[in-house]
Image 1: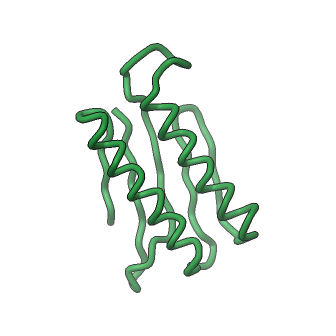
Image 2: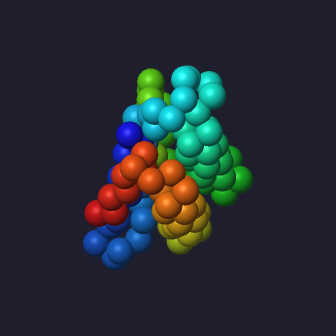
Image 3: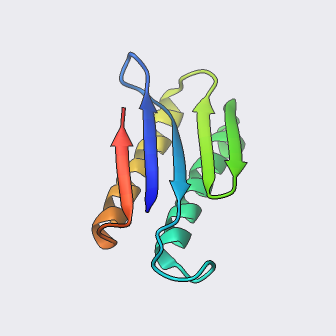
Length: 103
């Protein structure tokens, strides 16, 4: 199961996320669900840090990536919201393989 946790600040702005796990639909390297999630997460992190040049702490581990904005930003909020919406759509496409939490 892929678990995606999204973080909000007191102003209800999205300030980061943590994505862990594996969908388990196929062997490593052949799992379309995992590839879809991984690609979307990396594009989100790269858009925030490279395209917008915003400061964020990004940690990449085995089956885990976490992004935390150093300073909340309206552009980052929108990009992270795009990821959240995309993952809701993927959750519907791959029922039982993606769990989302927004807090």
